[in-house]
Image (tube, rainbow, N blue to C red; front, top):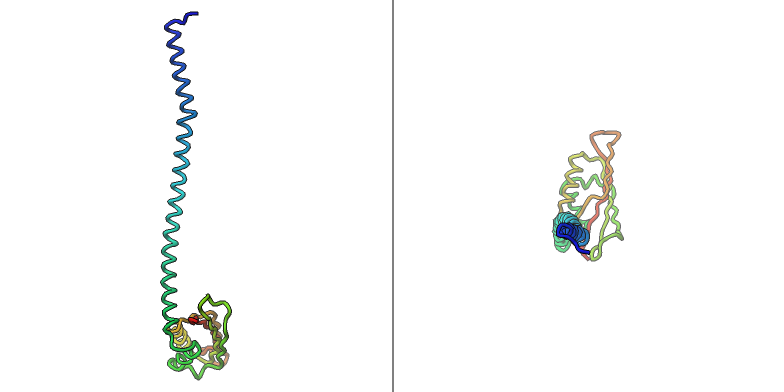
Length: 172
């Protein structure tokens, strides 16, 4: 059986088309899918990179605060209780303190001991209380207000009774 020129041409064209379709199906299509997967992975990793950069900034900020606290804790000159009493003398509310109860806390980070002091202050103005608490937080001793309870007095609504719990980290 002899194949004519026209039929040869049709067979060659069909072969080329079949070769192109097979090439697309088994070579080009998997390659394009792989490129799409890699593109999706790249965008995902870029988002992760942005997240990591923001966490880095947060970490550096927290590390700086820790260094400052460490420096304050190492440079402290006395106990938290003594410092709070000195601040009370400087702010002129020592006479209004009815009780000071120091307690040791078990939740301090490793290398530190946390002291908790509960202070009951009676018959003070809002200005005096805020002044005392501001000085306590800004003292050389690293202190923070953990809990604050304020009530107005029945006999004079301009005066306050307050219970303050202040914690202090000390380097051990």
